Length: 345
Image (cartoon, rainbow, N blue to C red; front, side, top):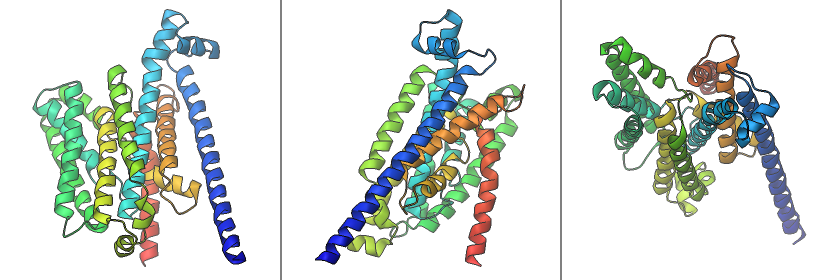
């Protein structure tokens, strides 16, 4: 009895330490995001003082202060935070469900499917505005369905899902390149900018839509997140513990696809955020779990910091956020591949 009580006390203590660590990491992420937000609001073509920034936020400043803060800079920051949180959570879901650190939506072709949809809408159909976003959303969903259908063999297996996804990513990239090569230079330039990922032009009503979509798919992940730890033990053991592996994977991947499609349809495919956020979050949480909440915070902080760096790191040069995350993420991907090769040797 004493041994059982001691074991229960040890489990409670471990849970308390885990909760405390989670709160501390989230607090640190919020402080970082707050500092980046202040920098993003104050810095720009017309620098604002702290007083002017606060007046602009409250809507009691001059006309130019209100315009700069509320119309130009704040929506950009909100778009970076929402898209980054969506990519971060989606990456954590994909990597945990498929048990593969390379199983990121941008590597599996889902982001490429959204880009292909947008390129077809603009260059092939001559559409613009919300129609492009809807087509991008449909493109991501269609690629996800294709991956699912081609990878299904009496059940869904992670390595087959990844291989089919990588193949479709190359197919989408080839089609995008071909469409761009056939287009007029004046038409291709804005589309090319969209395909590298940018939060500069997301405004008003589109931000509200993105916010509601991210909230809805995040809740779907939260409601179905309990089987994630059990799925990591393998399908047979998970089934023995009362979890239906295929159903759990379908719901979680559906939510992950929805998050990626929502963010990509408005900001374009911001590279490597989904790949980077989850492993950083798991290392920070350090309890062997999927670290979903921290992945959202890390994804938001990564995207916002990349956007601020892209605007101000090099004087006179403004780089889209997707370019900066690509510069950060590419070396990480090479390190990850090298580690996997060493582990398998």
